[in-house]
Length: 281
Ligand SMILES: O=C(O)CCC(=O)C(=O)O
Image 1 (spheres, rainbow, N blue to C red):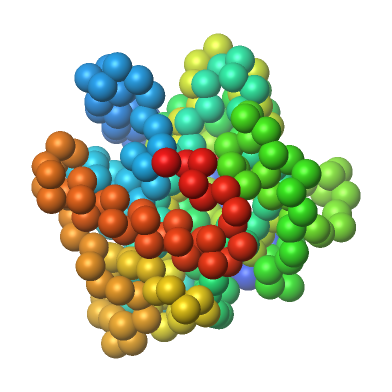
Image 2 (image 1 turned 180 degrees about the vertical axis):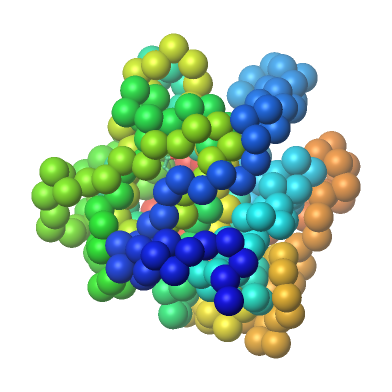
């Protein structure tokens, strides 16, 4: 019996590789989260950047609270079962007029896992639509595993530093846009081909995405990365367990733990073929 999703939503995930939208928190709560993030940015005098944006749940208490949000985990459990690790948490902020975009890709490219059962839960803190540059997905493109990539999209404005472009034949007319209101979430499969266009609105577009993986998934790389158990039990130990909730964003042990985990995460992505992980530093 499912906790939150209907049978037709679960079927849609299986057949098309995505679900959108799902309300996770109120618009007011999304706005308070935005304010908290922006207060931090004001305190450091610049937007969140570099290592702060990778595995952010190990650094910021608000990011940790989001990845263990029980409603999100109920949705995730409906799709991948009760024993859940959080592998990644990325911040996707697109400033207006920055030209920032995301080229067509699969999250799987640098993940080195088997089977491909990771999913991303992407929570909107601001309105996300055609104007602000929502995620567009190619329904059903998740069914054939991980495709090769070419590097034709390397530019300062591509939020994917590697400039990857998935080699997958599709008609752009088949792309589906995932529009979200603040506090809503979309889900996409680790092999779903997706992208997003620049933000042509007047406000920033802010989204937080968490990558969840069932504990039985194995790492195919020699180098093993870390992940945090966020629900259930881990009977497999396929991911190193050295991740802990952050004490405070400026706590030295917290910073050291997050930086160590990000280092491993990047080294693993380099083993999977990522040549530009260093650019994110
Ligand atoms: O935020 C975006 O525009 C793209 C996000 C994305 O590619 C992802 O979460 O996998």
